[in-house]
Image (cartoon, rainbow, N blue to C red; front, side, top):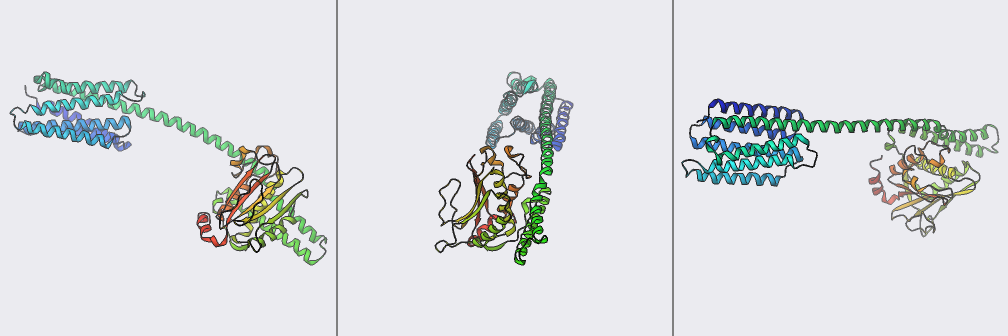
Amino acid sequence: MENSAVSVITLAINSVMYALYYFYIFVLNRNRYLAMWGFSWITYSLGYLLSMAVAAPALSAVFRYSFSLSSSILLLLGTILFVNGRVSKQATAALLSSTLAVLLVCFGLSARSAYLWPLPMATAAILMIISVVSGLTFLVTDGEAGLIRQITGWVFIFWGVHKGFYPFVSPEFYASEANYMSSLVLINAVNMAIILCYLDQNNRLLLEKEVQYRRLAEASENHLSNLEIVRRKFLASISHELRTPVTSIIGNLSIITDGIASSVDEARHYARLSLDKSLTLNLLIQDLFEVSTHEAMQLKLRKETVRLDDYFLTLEEKLQDGQENPHVRIYFTLSCGKRVHPCPSILIDRLRIEQVFHNLISNALKNIPDKGSVAISCCCANCVLPDEPGFEKPAKDFVHIYVADTGLGIEEQDLPYIFEMFYKRPNIHQAPGAGIGLNLSRDIVQAHGGRISVRSKTGQGTVFTIELAALHSRSHMAERSKTWI
């Protein structure tokens, strides 16, 4: 019994409706397997429509079987992509080339046969294999498939058996109206199963994202709580950072206004110290503003060439005059500066580097409980280092400046965090300070193209090392600091 045109058109329209649905979802989600499924059913319907439109039996059979094979291949590739998330290019090429080879052989044999028997037989076998493989793709998963995917896998397998069984066992049924109706039922079953699998996977992905969003919200809430705690501590302790230079300015100006200065030169000396402290205070206020607006990584520098020994002498005078703890000795050691090892020049912002030394010395004084010392020393590649832990010889074209104290030292677990903004060690919570000094010091040194590091041992003091490029390696220093200026 010949197949009716109504059955063929019904089958084609049914396939096109599913294809349009897959294309619609593809437009929304941009998942490639949806496009493959859509093209699969478009191809399937075109094969039947073209086979019905062509009068020649041989050409009609070619359209039907070739388009059916193409449809099954696209369906299989989309299924693999849906389940595994990727499709191997080698596997795709092997599948397409082997299918094409079989078709070419079948076409050649069919051309010599009045009944075209090789083409439907081979096509039915390939269609059965492809459909069974598609079903196994749903069944053989990582254990998260669930009942829906298992049902989908068995529907595919049953559909594949239906495609390949009747051409060999009952050719009369394969060419009957009942075959078209059973194919229509199975096509609907396969598509409904695929859609249910897609919706189930989407639901699982939505649940996973919801869990992620909840965790992110909890983490954000905890982060905001921590920020609030940090803000309160910052506001409670920032007054000390501002009070230190203000106290020094008031003291120096009191010496002048109360007539304690014995001469004009001494009065000028204290006036100059007050001016320097005012500039330091201004820098601190600017840094606090940069911290509040998250712009600390764009520090503005006014660099100038300075001789390291001259700068050390000036710095020593300022720090000795502003000494806060009379029980702690601060002294400077310059290993270079002799004829054999002349002192190099460096390109720096004087006030910014001075701010670094103030921060480091201030931290050192907090860690020295009673009597002790803070040693600031400088060494180039040709200098002889003291035989003490924490001192490393600089590389060629670089200088090292060390700030070493004899204080309590830093716990090993605190060392990775001491340069973080607002970080204060647990054992010195009562010490004054906002926890921004070391962070700003690191930013300033890095803005000069340098590095700052720390070595410490509990009970044996701490050594901070500042590495800066010598002037004759200026191009290297500029390269290292270009992202900071």
